Image (tube, rainbow, N blue to C red; front, side):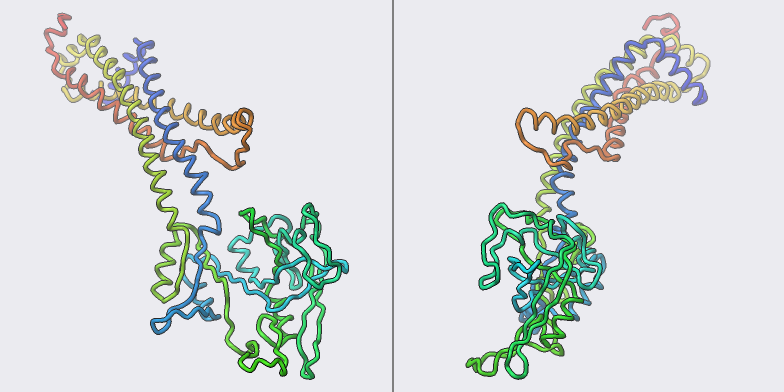
Length: 450
């Protein structure tokens, strides 16, 4: 008996009991839908809480504190260390932040700006790492800078012209985009007198708002080109001012010159994914680098969500198993109703395995049809929940849900797993009735004694 003949026989018999078939498929579809929707809640919460977080720089960053040397920790990170870190596999960028070692007294339109500090960063590396901006763009030209989000809410430096403290409702910093800011660099000349150089720069970006309410960012971020101009004038690293010869402090040392080894602070290695952080950390640790990353702390969170997804999937699987009772009942009734057909097939020489295959094929079709319908319905429910639940929460609880928050997420492999579970349960439910069909006596079946 060919497979096409078996399939045709199954299709004809399924059409004879459409109502019973519909109810069985409906029960299977409901079980499959329940399984997928329950598990999708775990996937959705993990995606919103964890996976969106792990793409953040805070998670993919590895802080470098120093390098071990002769069983001691040397906290100095030099240019060679920076170059090595950039060669490590799966490192997207290596960033650093060094403070200019003097107050540059920035001014806009003749008014002093309340900046706490001027920070040198590598904007090329920051672009790869994902420097957070609330407005504008990263610098592309030599004399372009970024200012902190709270720079207009910061009191002006003491002794600066203009002296009033900005009000709490000061205008947003983004209004300064495109403005010319004047930086004043100072240094002592050979005669001991102070020299100054004015450095006009253009504001092209505003940093993002700090995540914590008590934090403020009123820095001015300059690139390497501006730092080079600044250091060329001062003749010292990071624009430090020379100590006067009559300072009276015999133990004080002059700041390092441009020919001295350069030291970098607040060094971060940015991985190209949170899953790469552990490998990078282990590799650089073997080289003696002292590092730390919060990515490892997410392992426990992922474990919790994994357990939750397994638990929800287990509950959903129970619903599919309950639906298998309907499949078992349907297949048992089918064997009873088709006993004469089975007897005829046996009389003309049909092998028992062929008869068993017919009923297993029918039960698998019921399970597969229910799984497909259930998967489609689950996707529809997922879309409705993601659209409707935030609206309901906002309307009844007066709480604002983040725009990118996902309550239900169905990855493709979840749908495939649910379909395979449904198909497996259907085959298991139909196996006993199929085995019973192979044991029907030919003469009894033809006499309709069964």
